[in-house]
Image (cartoon, rainbow, N blue to C red; front, side, top):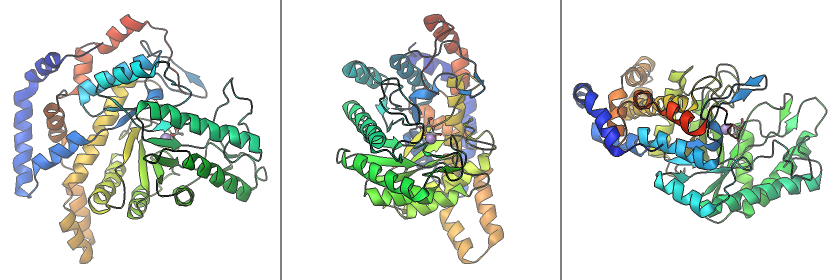
Amino acid sequence: MILSTEQIKEFNKKSLTDHQNEFETLQNKLIKSEKNTQVIVKKIEDFQVAIPSWALGAGGTRFGRFSYGGEPASLEQKIADIGILNALTRSAGAISLHIPWDIPSDYKAIKELAASNDIIFDAVNSNTFQDQPSNKESYKFGSLSNISSAIRDQAIQHNIDVINIGNKLGSKSLTVWLADGSIFPGQNNFQLALQNTESSLKKIYTNMPHDWKMFIEYKPYEPNFYSTVIQDWGTSFMLANACGDRAYSLVDLGHHLPNTNIEQIVSTLMLKGKLGGFHFNDSKYGDDDITVGSIKPYALFLIFNELVYGMQNNTQNPDLAWMIDASHNIKDPLEDIMQSLEAILIAYAQALLVDQKKLKDAQMNNDVVLCQEILQEAYRTDVRPLVAQARINSGGTKNPLQAYRKFEIRKTLIKERGTHTLATGL
Ligand code: PSV
Ligand code: MN
């Protein structure tokens, strides 16, 4: 299903006057506090978030999975879904592939399809947390950390294969998330597991093209419940340093124990020039992978405040690779992703409103009350007109979710693909 520019323009027309009024009211308010709305809107326009190839179908838990009508059954259909998201939002201009779930069969055709949807290939993700039928060795007791060199070699080779696949598509980075760890005390020698992981990652790193980056994700627990080899940002940071200049930590919002101060982690990593990638989702208890901003929008804003500060002040840190890493268990996956994109852009826009100079002055005066006022003034501003304006400027819809429903996109997808298709992924 392809949405034309005309359809989108026609859709926007109806609510354009209301939007312009809302936008002007906000703009006038922001001018009073010396905010340059044009600059902020342009920044929002430029913010692009990759959509993972595995999140376009229904997700599931280990207790069950309820499939969704019209799920994309092939990589081509997944790209088509992201094309729809991108046409509506203009902020989903990239896809992140998980290998082996989404290996292209015809690279030229896939690249052309992505290009025709204005989609680039972002980081490629390796998978050594599941055994594949073609694998000789099993990852039951770990992959890059395994005590067996044959198993480690297989996992290293898999990552190299993933790099080669990504390279053919124009990707420039590899994300490694390791499930490796132990379920019971005594099962693993911590030091040996860490040493093996470090030497395996170094081998992968040396096999990356020179313009590639490696992102090392961390996670405190799950699927292993006693210990995880790369359990926290410190371990990831240490491994990234051991690998080299083009290895970075990746922060996934769901990969922290409850109440962890993620904004401080972001800040530290950016100061050290080692934050490479970012996975968005939200959670109440653990790695719940639910819609961004659905549980802790203020925490998301505080994280963005540090990201914006880092992007403005830490030239030593590279541009970040942004990705939504969520699962859609009961909602229409495309609607869910649009809600996540909206939440991300809202938090970003709010963070761009923080008066950094005033905040610094207040901090220098130890004026704690004023510091809080400055942050909350930004957080409590309804920035939705800025986000909508950014979308309209770049050819998207004023309200993507409404447009999606108005155009009956899911109904069309079900008609085209049927009710019983199944997407690859978790
Ligand atoms: C693991 O929980 C993770 O966050 C990693 O990024 C994986 O690659 C992804 O989710 C999909 O399982
Ligand atoms: Mn992740």
